[in-house]
Length: 278
Image (cartoon, rainbow, N blue to C red):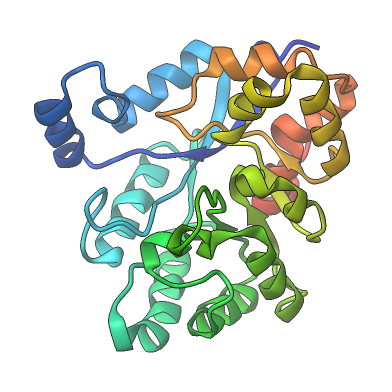
């Protein structure tokens, strides 16, 4: 089975509001990836590469989206309503000082129950807190109560504050919330070996081409096999990810047709809506 023709659900996609893409266009020109990440840009790329559905994830970043996370969630919910067969979305939260603990659970509840969003995205670096910071406990408890998954950004790349999204910190929260479905994004970055030990789903967005360039195809195959098809989720980090690069790498892996179906669609669809499993 070819990755270009199989049924695919890209589980890590960024679609920005029009005013944000217009600003990138003015500042960086038409060829910059973030100048081409509006909803229509995304849908065209999905059609071009056979992506049937995409999960829209925010970045807890008021400069990419809106200062008010509720406004970001309304924007994402509007896209889901406009394109119910193509888009799902996770809720945004942003750092709000002393109010974060009190407000964030209600922001998530509103996003799920009023705007139809399917989960929560946490970007520890942009929130200026560690992935195992106890300030996250109330919103994680709310996610567990609502029965929705949580995606943690995890791409630590240097010493210091950026290590706050390291997978070992996410693993601690998984132990605190064993009934919560957690997706560790980017395979945990270059700390992928720490992500192996977590009882968590992992998406391959952003990092897959980096690993292939660093280690080569045979070692990438071993890494993905170590996680196993029952944990892997296909994702690219659009607009940064190039579908051709992902397909070229994944077509060289040794997954069976059934395993490809599981990684490309079944795992994420089953997390969001069990009836969508192939």
